[in-house]
Length: 272
Image (cartoon, rainbow, N blue to C red; front, side, top):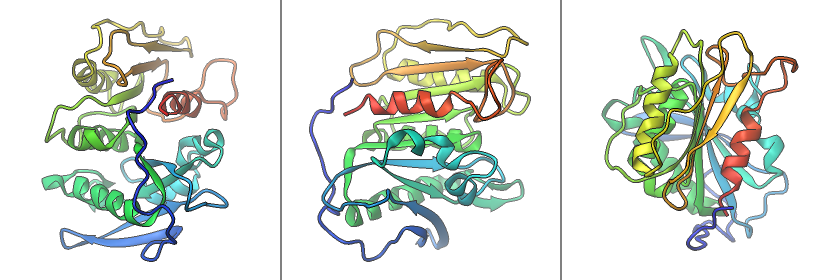
């Protein structure tokens, strides 16, 4: 268990939200209309501080794909583990010639996600020291970028099969990091995930090592928990035998049995 330095409930505690609602919300950021889905726990209590978790979509994905499921379980399956203790937000990326994603031109996506955090701070009861972001592929790259730019405002991020796609600007603060990547990924090779991982190995002061990875064809995964990291800044890395997927499975398990949500919640929930 990693304890926080202090408790910091947001200004929205004790208030009924007035400018946002559960479901689809819109805001204008840098003269562009942006959309995001707010998912509140059942029986949301505005006197109780909640964890805050961004769920970021992949290239050509949407906020609906993350919030409502389809190809994946909603929010990568994490709500089954959080037991009503978290507020989730799924934002929409901008559409360009490649489709919807997180190109983050001129840091415009960082500005958007920052505005969401400011708005939810004022409208909802959140434990401001327990903010997280997770995403797959382009969403992993954006979660990495968010940690780079706003490291002081995020407790941890989780990147599934990501790469340096959305930049990494404005700071070198350490951030707790969970990374996951397939050894047979033909969309974003595992070397891309290692590159992101090694950024946080250095920033978090972890001992350098070469984590073991499963053999091709083994349909197994290997979780490595780095040692020597700065207090409150752990780093976990899961390499799995498989392709470009946020929901990998091991040999002998059903297609619906993935370790992703279990590991991410174990990682996020250690922060108190």
